[in-house]
Amino acid sequence: YVGKSGWWQDAITAADIQGSYCYLTTYNRLMIYKIVNGKLLFDHRIYMKPITQKEAVAVSKSGKIIVADEQQTALGGGYLYEIQDVQPSPKGKSKKRK
Image 1 (cartoon, one colour):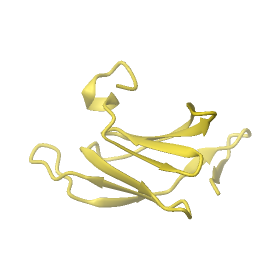
Image 2 (tube, helix red, strand yellow):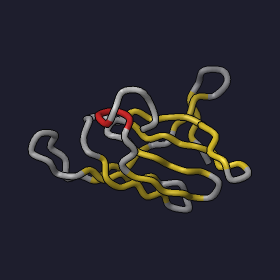
Image 3 (cartoon, one colour):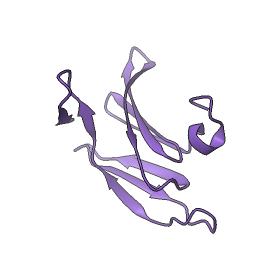
Image 4 (cartoon, one colour):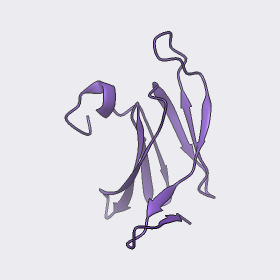
């Protein structure tokens, strides 16, 4: 788990590495870590709605992020999502990662 909320919010369901970044999904968010000297340093997170069982993440060399969720009776799903990677800038404005 990546937090104290148990599997519902904090279980890692998928991972991908592209360049010097590691991308991890949970049921409700995508977490992005920078890889520095073999260690993961938290960079930022993107919350995703609806809460579903995300089961796959893939990041292209151009930075396109695709997430897939599993079709499940209780949670729905069975879709592909393209995620826009926007991170906050130091001045509180958003900027797209290049």
